[in-house]
Amino acid sequence: MSTARARRHRRSREAALTVTVLFAAKPESWADYAAPLRAAFAEEGLDAALVTEAAPETVDYIVYAPSSGLEDFHPFTRLKAVLNLWAGVEDVVGNPTLTVPLARMVDDAGLTQGMVEWVTGHVLRHHLGMDRHILGQDGVWRRGAPPLATERRVTILGLGALGAACGQALARLGFPVTGWSRSPKRIEGIDARSGADGLAAALARADILVLLLPLTTETENLVDAARLAELPEGAVLINPGRGALIDDTALLAALDAGHLAHATLDVFRTEPLPPEHPFWAHPKVTVTPHIASETRPASAARVIAANIRRAEAGAPLHHLVDRARGY
Image 1 (cartoon, rainbow, N blue to C red):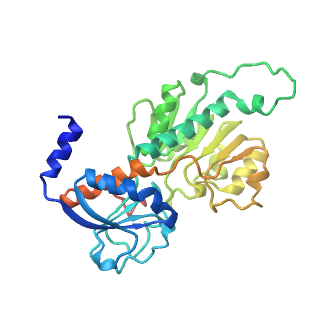
Image 2 (spheres, one colour):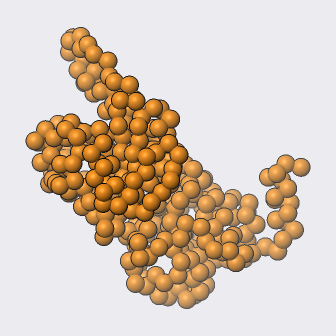
Image 3 (cartoon, one colour):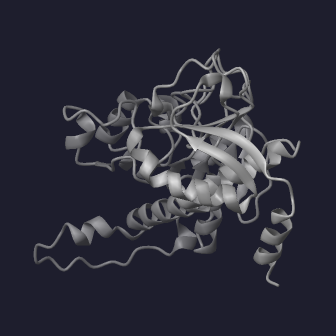
């Protein structure tokens, strides 16, 4: 019997666990998530009533996106946990009515793979100077090959699951990768730094800087004029993390002054990015519409179902948010 069949057989002999799970996200997301969640619940042996509406006092778990509009958790008197559909929790972590455990979306294989592909693609774009040839189809024979990856230093700010995965992927391509996080970490293939001195050192060696930090009170505007000045002349900034990590005015000034060569931005303080925002027309800025990665229903459903199963079995939830740290 295969491992998967044996697991299903074992679970079929266990008592089914009956829970009510409220799906609280934009209505259009329901069509994408309903079937994958039900399939994942069945695989985990959960007899779960998955609903989009329910009397609050009957709900055990909430699968949640801040875009749902749900803000008051007080009425959910039986609530055991909220499972965020997104990796970022800045829009809900400070909600005073949310007192039950909050888990964020981590270890979603689809989310991680999507981010690795986007970051690797844009790092290679700038490393290889693709724009010079793609946009310069004007009959001019432009000589000069780019340096090898071993000669282009990449720094990643944020060494969580996404940052670590992106850093290791780039290291496998030969890039010298420096990473920075608030707390010390050891990650194979990455020169991991922490603390104020570590941040300065990481910035100083960033020919290409990638931002994958969570947004907290400590990281908001982290990349300001002073820290942009610590980057090497001609550096490139890539931000698929959170828009408010960057001081927009300082970034534009650094680009206009020629200190930075380019900024590729996927996230912004206001989304969609207003048409009048100067990023759109700036020749040294590439705007992408928050597409670096997203939660994939099939893989995310498995993460959520496994976490609920753990909770129902009395085990601690995975990927719990530390309220004090904000992620």
